[in-house]
Length: 381
Image 1: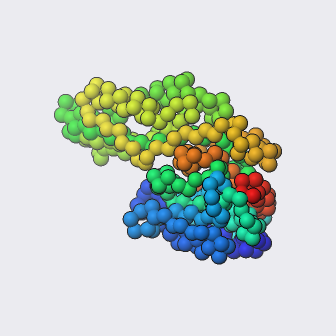
Image 2: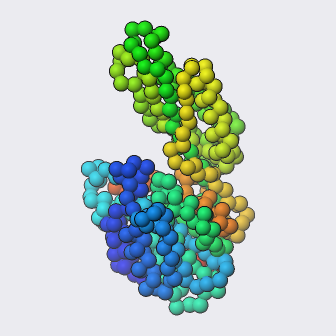
């Protein structure tokens, strides 16, 4: 498959909006992207299965399989993008634009750009008899709920020996990443006239205690769960946004805080969340207010693939890079739950994702195709 076809395919994918977001005002389906990928892969001889992720099928996963039998290799990516502010882009984010050996467009690197390269790699094997199957997997809602990956684990497939998730890592294998929890703290006090504190019970005063406690707890997490394999070697807890009150002359009756916590593989989300819940309960009792901890999204577990497994060793040998750890979360824990050795390795840089003027370097295209073909050859031939 030549570069012209690859660019045409990426242009079509970028031009098909598929934002996923916890904000209903932004959230879209990904079905048009799934149908496009399915049509391309069906013409190449892949068996196509589309798995609905929501009731009306506007969000879906694609499982495209070449060959049959147990084992084999999964090449996986998500089809959704984050929201965007087109006023901050130098070119139309929904139109692929080439400038200075770079391909600009929403999702060009995170991560629609992976699919034409995976398809190009697979095209070299469509006339060969595979000993084990090659599966191209495309998922929904990775950037929000990860419901696409969750649907796969609930269904119990696809299964293979190994899975490569093509998130942007500059083609360096990643075998470990942090988990993520996104939580909200809701405090209900009692509103009243600000001239007399006895007339109410300030939710903001209690929230001050909550924030101080979370900052203290953050330091404790760093002492308990540090991991020197990460660039940021400790769990992070970010106080992201706060809302509450309505007037300076009223005692605040309600307030809400959102935070995220990115856990190293040294600990687990459930333990940490249980500890936070107990701390919030204690503050509620101290201040005589109602404090509720609510999940904004279902949490994502930390991910570790053993450094001495076959897939990591092969990826390190082929790339010349030792497998790394990253702070961002992916669908890797879900594919690993299906019994596959799993790594994250794809073209482009994560530093360019989730921001205006996202781009994929043209220089990443052929090395990515070559690398994927070497992996296909190992696992499928």
